[in-house]
Image (cartoon, rainbow over all chains, first blue to last red; front, side):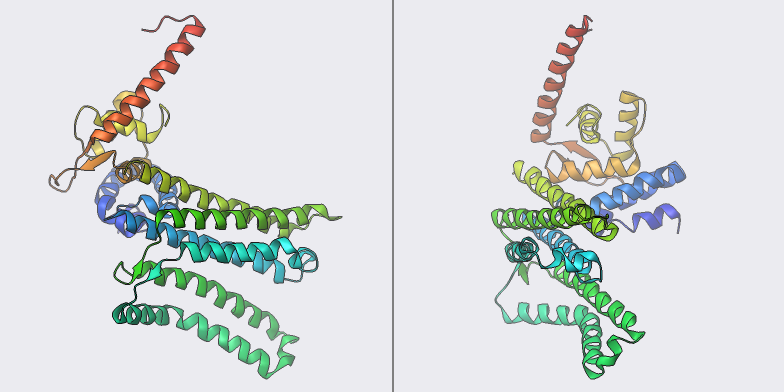
Length: 259
Length: 99
């Protein structure tokens, strides 16, 4: 397979089905000069699921909801990681009321954007089967870490500590990724996408939580006697992730404006 | 939208009638002197289709032409009128007589 063909396979499936052949043909004709533009376009499309070819508006809303949940998970993960590591941030901003409030706001946002399960036996069985399949590895990994830490608390101080910590954070990251993939793979017969108003409100809440958390962490990073580089990077990263929420809100508005 | 915006250029290219992707880019090259990147072109097509400003016609071989919808025509006309107004005012301020 050519490099252009490999790049085309990185596009979202619905876009690939619709435009993939034409993109591959033109890209092959243009050669390597088309690759940077193609790569930028792939990233751009993954960040804008509401504009992928779709069969209905509900499908677009469902995809936007999954993206919002995935970005919120990334925000939570980064903020949580920065607070839990042995850095100045751990002792300073980690326990601040603003960051606790962000956690609550994120939870409210997630509840608003979450697709609602259909109340049928078949839908419940399908959802549970898929979630169990996707989440088995992170749950087992996380449980193993907890069990090891409880069985021999001495491990916490031993050289194995880093391995255990790495496994714990890996389990959390896998759980977030696989959870979003599981929801994204469930069809309209299992999950009902959120209504437009609820979805927008939820994304606004998630965006606000990301902005507040990013600002608090960034403020802490630059307000001390010395710059805390890790906190600064995390704070800036959280503010950067907010653009994904803004882009999704704009896409939803653009798509709705033509209905 | 702006004059050099990929979506506006695609809409302009389609104003003459339905075209497939490669032909759209050729029309844009005739208009601006350079082709859009492949990713930019098809990203713009996906966005325009999502906004229902263009629609697909039946496949012609392995190519699928697209055309403006009524809404797309309306949006393009509004954008072009707005750009023409800005261009006319700018040229007048520069003391240049609009062609």
